[in-house]
Image (cartoon, rainbow, N blue to C red; front, side, top):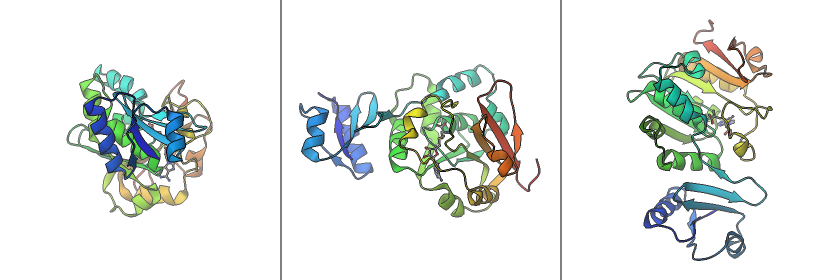
Length: 261
Ligand SMILES: C[S@@+](CC[C@H](N)C(=O)[O-])C[C@H]1O[C@@H](n2cnc3c(N)ncnc32)[C@H](O)[C@@H]1O
């Protein structure tokens, strides 16, 4: 993968591209007036990360362009500011000051909503196994030009960790997070995170493992929460209690620390 800028970049875009390349140990290529196809040929690279004033966008041959967007987080935070509820926060019983481990960060929409819910005194760590996704989301969380102050502040509070959640969970002390949250990839195309289709080609599509659930129950002080498609049955497999709301395309389920419901 190489990093370059849009054509005629501003000084800020050039600085951003330089920082991104250094942060992820990638080669920075001056765009000059090369087309994307020319750059690919010249550097024998199919994956090009293009930085513009709108942030970073990954263009890979044969794949959908991939870029950060706050997706559902934008309107969910707006609704929360109006005093409405958010089902995910309700199922997780989120309070200001809570610590949440989002074990399947993906595009980060849920992590951003968690960060809003736990507030300044809380902590949200998003774990993502795929380096490319983690790279783009970490960068987007820092650079996406959100108009809403609440959204901007929540985005800045999400901490990104690259790694398989099983390894990360194993490295954590017992009871070190209030909630551990899983939203593994699922079959249906409809997902509450609109835009999830954009990461399908980059994502880890493996199902959730029993070992990860067991570790999550050790690390969580309060409960482990699982989100899946409305036809998903992982909650039965793992003995979680479903939390259903009418008309939802997703099913949340939870298991209390200590095995209760
Ligand atoms: C459905 S997406 C999560 C969407 C996310 N909740 C959001 O709001 O954008 C699932 C993500 O979890 C990642 N993933 C799957 N298995 C994982 C694992 N074992 N460890 C860490 N991340 C994993 C996938 O690569 C994918 O990015």
